[in-house]
Picture (cartoon, rainbow, N blue to C red):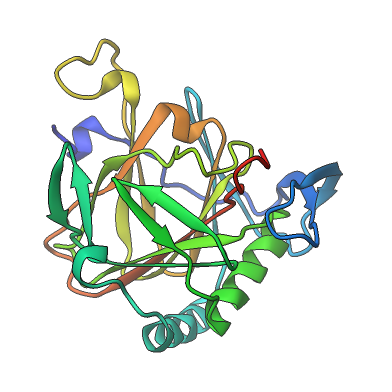
Length: 255
């Protein structure tokens, strides 16, 4: 599968500083796992310059959320606070076989929440102060509430993530996934489900982004229904990266 520059649609370009993104703001509920309720369209509390990333059934928004100085501090604090999975918890099942995850991983969130993917159920650890601060900033910026975060740490460009979709049944299908990147910039590639592998039957160009230090990528519905995403190996990258994907998990019977 060729992911070279000739086969990938790049989305680099200037950010429109005159545009302020608007989304539906959802009301927080006091009870754990309660349904959220949509209110009128409202401007974000802390607007940032957004760049729209679009293709067929792909709807994303990208912005630099944290300035470099603050992003540096957040990275160092996460290095101190986050405890990553080890042993069996650091493995996944793919087509019945067990593999070690090619990166470090941890799960944090509200009490009682769990997330199942790749055949393994992950329970949420209590929020750390820094994760809670980042979550609050993302909520103020996007107008969306999140109760869970998956933390991935890539020691260098050899650590990677294969193609997949974040479409597990526990996730609220109406809520975007908010991806915060800290550390080394890495390529992030979207590929449409109809143009993958030997059985592909459509010619839809992949979409390639470079996720920068301090950036936020908002993957809006229906992106994860139709598009796979990956973080491929980049041997020239020698520095670590931490990625936080904030999600909203819906308790059983609450969808």
